[in-house]
Amino acid sequence: EEALRRLKEGVAADPTHQRIRLTLGFVQSQLGNMKEARAALTAATQLGTDEGVRQSAMNMLKNLPQ
Image (cartoon, one colour):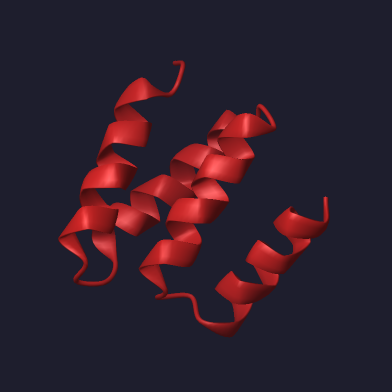
Protein backbone atom coordinates (compact mmCIF):
# COMPACT_ATOMS: atom_id res chain seq x y z
CA GLU A 1 0.00 0.00 0.00
CA GLU A 2 2.76 2.45 0.94
CA ALA A 3 4.75 1.71 -2.22
CA LEU A 4 1.68 2.16 -4.37
CA ARG A 5 0.87 5.47 -2.68
CA ARG A 6 4.44 6.73 -3.19
CA LEU A 7 4.47 5.71 -6.84
CA LYS A 8 1.18 7.50 -7.46
CA GLU A 9 2.64 10.59 -5.77
CA GLY A 10 5.65 10.30 -8.09
CA VAL A 11 3.42 10.14 -11.15
CA ALA A 12 1.46 13.16 -9.91
CA ALA A 13 4.70 15.10 -9.39
CA ASP A 14 6.20 14.12 -12.75
CA PRO A 15 3.72 12.47 -15.14
CA THR A 16 6.41 12.01 -17.79
CA HIS A 17 8.86 10.02 -15.63
CA GLN A 18 9.26 6.78 -17.53
CA ARG A 19 10.79 4.61 -14.78
CA ILE A 20 8.12 5.55 -12.22
CA ARG A 21 5.47 4.42 -14.71
CA LEU A 22 7.34 1.15 -15.26
CA THR A 23 7.58 0.49 -11.54
CA LEU A 24 3.94 1.45 -10.99
CA GLY A 25 2.92 -0.99 -13.71
CA PHE A 26 4.94 -3.77 -12.10
CA VAL A 27 3.47 -3.13 -8.64
CA GLN A 28 -0.07 -2.93 -10.01
CA SER A 29 0.41 -6.23 -11.84
CA GLN A 30 1.69 -7.88 -8.66
CA LEU A 31 -1.43 -6.67 -6.86
CA GLY A 32 -3.65 -8.11 -9.61
CA ASN A 33 -4.74 -4.72 -10.93
CA MET A 34 -4.26 -5.54 -14.59
CA LYS A 35 -6.13 -2.55 -16.02
CA GLU A 36 -4.00 -0.12 -13.99
CA ALA A 37 -0.84 -2.12 -14.75
CA ARG A 38 -1.56 -2.01 -18.48
CA ALA A 39 -2.15 1.76 -18.38
CA ALA A 40 1.07 2.46 -16.48
CA LEU A 41 3.17 0.14 -18.64
CA THR A 42 1.71 1.57 -21.85
CA ALA A 43 2.65 5.04 -20.63
CA ALA A 44 6.19 3.78 -19.90
CA THR A 45 6.50 2.65 -23.53
CA GLN A 46 5.46 6.07 -24.80
CA LEU A 47 7.34 8.40 -22.43
CA GLY A 48 11.00 9.18 -22.00
CA THR A 49 14.01 8.18 -23.99
CA ASP A 50 15.37 5.20 -22.01
CA GLU A 51 15.15 2.31 -24.45
CA GLY A 52 15.86 -0.22 -21.68
CA VAL A 53 12.85 0.98 -19.70
CA ARG A 54 10.74 0.95 -22.86
CA GLN A 55 11.74 -2.63 -23.62
CA SER A 56 11.06 -3.74 -20.04
CA ALA A 57 7.61 -2.19 -20.18
CA MET A 58 6.89 -3.85 -23.52
CA ASN A 59 7.97 -7.23 -22.14
CA MET A 60 5.79 -6.82 -19.05
CA LEU A 61 2.83 -5.80 -21.21
CA LYS A 62 3.30 -8.86 -23.40
CA ASN A 63 3.24 -11.12 -20.34
CA LEU A 64 0.20 -9.60 -18.61
CA PRO A 65 -2.82 -11.88 -18.50
CA GLN A 66 -5.57 -10.84 -20.88
